Image (cartoon, rainbow, N blue to C red):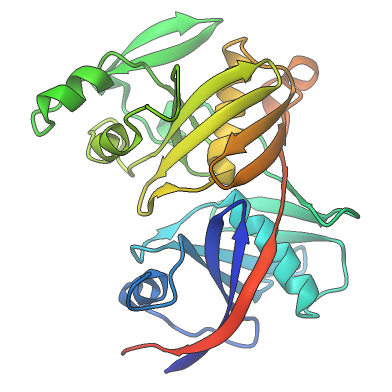
Length: 299
């Protein structure tokens, strides 16, 4: 089957975008994995499907698959590319669209300067909804919020386990699970070792996106994220939101924060001080079309 696609990127987080508004392609997990493969397919961190609205209250449905073929709940950088795609393809003339994901509703808005803002909704702190099993961790109260010291696991290499069990994480969901830790230097942080270690940790039943945040000042951080099903990416939109939310709850950050990733700059706003835990997170950043093409997908 030959499929048309658009290659896009948001702060270096790259995507294959598929138009399924006129009918589903019916791709399998193996076929999504092929599209994401950088050697044999097109190559991307995630594959984004643009689908027709499931009901009148939405403009579109937004479906995301990682490059390992598995479907995931959310991708903030992908959401920015989503609205840029539907507008550039003439699928809508609205500057702001309402889309349905597997577990959420998102409002995506293209700004006059070309950047895109995503209303990511409120973060979720209920451990069962992340999901996170506290039986495999020890709590530490910081600024009226819990940081978690993860228990060691038998399969881990001793050096990795020693680092991991001495670096507590904060846990939350931005529609997908995140564990964020503060590090002195993101460039030397063991992102790959600890990120991979967390993927098999029993505390995270559906795996986790592992964020490593370095404080610059109260309005700026550096961030690297090891994403479940994709490994480290140049940027992670939900990871940037999770890191800023964690920093604000820990009393380290103000309401508006610039997040410097390896792929570029993202801006996050969370008015927790004035609106509380139900405040919505706003993510703003670039969305760029790289090229278009078609590819023959193996059965």
